[in-house]
Length: 98
Image 1 (spheres, one colour):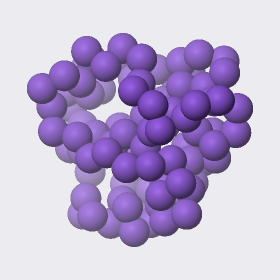
Image 2 (cartoon, one colour):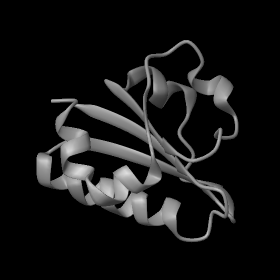
Image 3 (cartoon, helix red, strand yellow):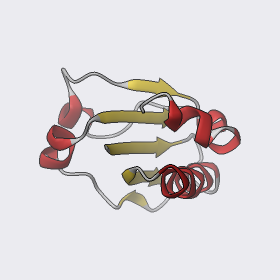
């Protein structure tokens, strides 16, 4: 299973990166392939391509703001959650996709 995720928060200093780390750890535990793009103070890092969006089984947005370049996943089915949910309950969140 392939999941792509975007994490983004208001200040973009810590929480989006914490959420990304927690999602990667949880995906490893659940044997899920994941790529997480962060949109923080440094801009977009680990950018997900349109091709990666197209080939993903699930798209997860763990955000507190509208992510940049949202046209890349326009019209696709998304799961939207908070950054806090991704930080505090990443395994439960990803289990919903299995």
